[in-house]
Image 1 (tube, helix red, strand yellow):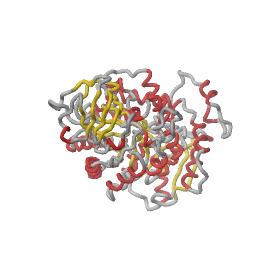
Image 2 (cartoon, helix red, strand yellow):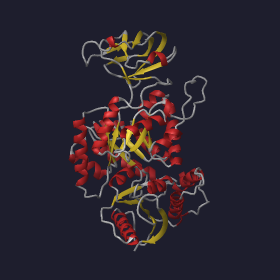
Image 3 (cartoon, rainbow, N blue to C red):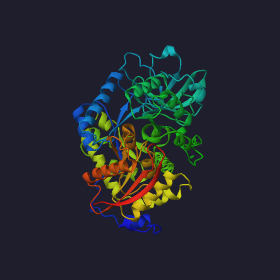
Image 4 (tube, helix red, strand yellow):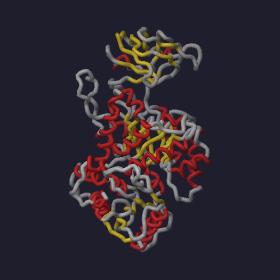
Amino acid sequence: MLNNRPIGSKESTLEHFCKLNINDPVHVYRMTGIICTIGPSCQKVEVLKDMMASGMNIARLNFSHGSYEYHGTTIKNIRTAISTFEDRITVGIALDTKGPEIRTGLICGSGTAEVALRKGAKIKLTTDIQKASKCSAEELYVDYQQIAKVLKVGSHVYIDDGLISLSVDSIVGNDIYCTIENGGKLGSKKGVNLPGTKCDLPAVSEKDTKDLLFGVEQGVDMIFASFIRNADGVRAIRRVLGERGRFIKIIAKIENHEGVENSIPSTKMTFYHFLSADEIIREADGLMIARGDLGIEIPPEKVFVAQKMLIARCNIAGKPVICATQMLESMTTKLRATRAESSDVANAVLDGADCVMLSGETAKGDYPVQTLMTMCQICIEAESVMNCRNYFEDVLQCTSKTSDITQVLAIAAVSAAFSCSASAIVVLTSSGHSSRLISKFRPSVPIIAITREAQSARQMQLFRGVLPVYYKQPRNPDWMADVDLRVQYGMKIGQGLGIIKSNTLIVVVTGWTKGSGHTNTMRLLRVP
């Protein structure tokens, strides 16, 4: 078996792929987290219970839609569903912000009116507020007051998720005269993208501020922050969250060219001189690759390049990374995923994503539970063919030497797990920091993370391979006795799930005293 190869005898990717067999059994525990967007199709407690039992790790609330009353009810339903499992299942709750955005005005007639934009026709964009409710096929209001200053002749403007595209012919004052390159029917209040154009939109809109404070009141576990362009955007969100929300994780959503690193070497694409993603990765608690808007801001054929690059950078930094948008889109209305979608999910796993996400598929789809189960199965299949030993050595090679005891111990624990074919790694953690570092080095076995902090348990659902276990028993005054009790509890959980078998070895990582930052001990235990 691959996992029994000694360190140093690295198997090539081609050798590994040649040994694959479609009839080989898969492992029992899924390592990749699955995030499900909660909407009308799955808001009820009974459906949520089915989704949790089927493998949902994080519930996402999309604040681009819905009232506070609606989202408050959803959060209550999620917690009611969780409570029925008696701490056997831990599910995180994520608030996804609407983010700063540019939108068109209202079409003349009514809120549901549409106009037909014809390819080759001329149209004027204006910021004149008097035209905000009088949009037509000849004149379109845009709510970004600085748009005439940031665009230039030859720039492109995309409307309604890129379905309609305009080319800028001239700019006169605050009016922008364009040619319609790709037409279609246009409704009211549609999103506007300005690919390759640096905008000075606020990092946190007025609506976002209210939504974030609502999230703090509701006790959400993480924020999926939309349209993050630089580290300042992350810091702005932290300021809004304040002292009460200081433990909430911030996942920066990369949705435009400013959030992506690496210029694209083409003389025809001079606007792709991207800002570094590294500063965002350093400041945020993780990244989400939101491929929908990203595929409008950069050419669609470049999205996979950005995906691989951002996942790799997060893997090296030890920060969780989520791959999202249109992963199983066809299952919104159909019971079976397409081959392309299955390959897309599998390749995100093979790229190194910690989590994959379902959006409209679960929020408004006809088959939310079946879609989730399909994604679970694809993830398990993909994980079963990963060359984890090579991945460990690649991450290790890209990691600078350090005197940080927890990271050194994490490396040793993963190396030991490979060397002795351990069935699991059991780690005792308060904040989840130790489990995150172990996850960074991508062991081939689950990481059973025992914590007394309920929020830490929910947040650890972000980390690949981590099985968070919320331990509610009171502390034993004898520290070592307390450690042994928690380790035994983790072993019991692992055995109950079929992860840990009798007479196998497990790697145990603990600390010398209570609290975060004291992890310094590794042991190998034989399971009775």
